Amino acid sequence: MLSRITIANSSVRHIALRGATRRSINFEASHLMVSSLNDESVVEIIDDSKDPRLEEVYNLRYNVARKIMHLPRSHPVVYEQASGNYGVKDALDDEDSTVHFAVRNPNNGKVIAAIRTVDANKSVLEMEKYNWHNLSATIKEEGCVEWCRLCADPSARGSSAAPMLYIQSVRYHQALGNCNFTFMVDQKATKLLKYYNNWTIAEQLTDEPVRCDEFEPGRKSYVMSMPMGKPGTTARAKFQSHVYYPAILGTCFMKSYRDLPAEVAVA
Image 1 (cartoon, one colour):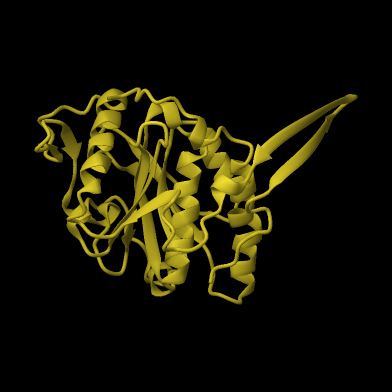
Image 2 (spheres, rainbow, N blue to C red):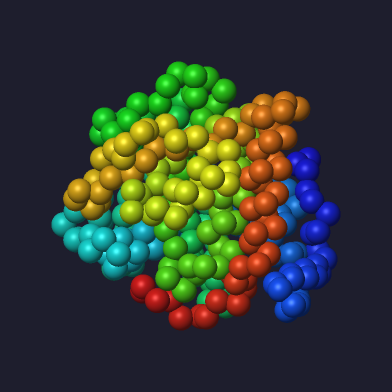
């Protein structure tokens, strides 16, 4: 059984002092805690490439990429679904090494955020396939998984939906014995990059941004690593105290995914 912090299923009150002003914030933490890896009441875990729920994930990808990156329907990864909608899918989505995580809007049942993880020891990652960056054997030897294809409906941005994907993916892969995550941060996301470098234990693997222009010409990103450490080690304790638990507590102060509007902004 994975460890769970004690705030689950409870109301927590936070008092913040700013000069002479006292502000109180009430929030519910119960929606953050998933009782086990088999409990998909909050985050759905999809590890079968033939699962029909993936059509919803691929359609969300397309809608977001079309709106933000102006991805054309003529792009090789775009396909027409049986429903008449369009989706974004690539070869890694069919690999056994790939696991998807998704969150639905409880007010309309639609997938509003999703992320993909790919086992770096079982598949060639995108960054390696396109010669953007090759991970070292040292990072891979303790089990390494890539976070990629994060997408969220605009209505879900700023809510707890996307962070919960990361939290549950950590639980899932820690249970499988993986001890490292790798991911890419857009060079334009300077605030996010500073956050990772200054406030977490993430390690920047590339001094300069590398190409990652499969969807958007000219796009460049930094390659990052998030070491989680093996169970019972100082490295694991550091990850839990500096990244995992702060992430859980941080989402408590975000807009709840349960309160999102029923309208889907990009559909």
